[in-house]
Amino acid sequence: MSYQAQDLLRLVDLEPLEHNIYRGQNRDIGTGRVFGGQVLAQALVAARRTVEEDRVAHSLHGYFILPGDLERPIVYFVDRLRDGGSFTTRRVTAIQHGKAIFNLSASFHREEPGLDHQDDPPDAPDPETLTSELERIRAVADQLPPELRGVLTQDRPLDIRPVDPPDLFDPEPRPARRVMWVRAIGEVPDDLLRHQALLAYASDYGLLATVLQPHGVTIRTPGMQVASLDHALWYHRRVRMDDWHLYVIDSPSAAGARGFARGSIYSRDGALVASVAQEGLTRMRER
Image (tube, rainbow, N blue to C red; front, side, top):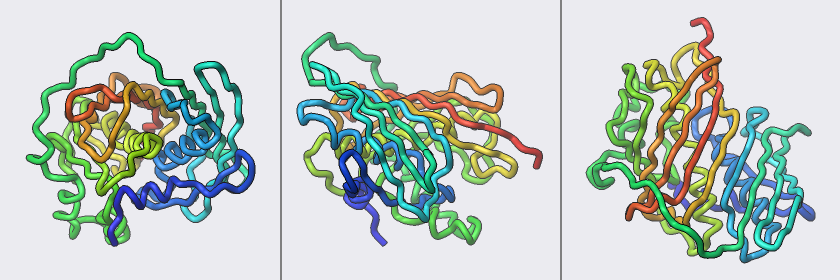
């Protein structure tokens, strides 16, 4: 079944239930629980629904509290914390089974001119010269566990093309750095919130995998328990996710069963459109 950006946008286009209350559905991407990027994107949309039209999201800070249940919808409660002259602040709580599974603080800013500088992106091969991650997975589908084969080889709303990807089954220790191109598959309407929601969804991909690289393990290594704990995202410039973006991730530290990763997202023409940071649980249980 085809699954493109428009399908993902329908997933994050929340159902209004009451004043400041919204409901969202889920889709399994192969982790057995709700993907953190989905909850982040849905919470952003819930917050933005309560903000004046001239305000644009510039920062999101979220905490993952409990694993999300794929079988139940998620209800989002929005608190209108502040409506200032230039900035608007919202807090969103995601609820399942009567408990908070995620909360988000989001800030929106009335766009205005100001100082402008940025780091340059690293050199990277053009995305057209690279193989998509999904193609690599489908090429070895017969080696995947039968119970995961269908969900891991399903269509995706994002085309992700890693530069120098690790071995899928026998990764060796390598530096904690990952570079990949990403874009939405299919057309995306000319609406900034939709593009920001797609970027929020994509920003949760690959961070903790980068933390694990120096240790030669993956999220599917027996005994490895991995989960996102928090996530921060800053939008620096306008974004169009139906064009290619270069996502550059590194992990400067892992200690105490927690790993930290940070990322920079550049448009194809070299503009730094967003920065990302995340800490996650990286617990190795006895095998």
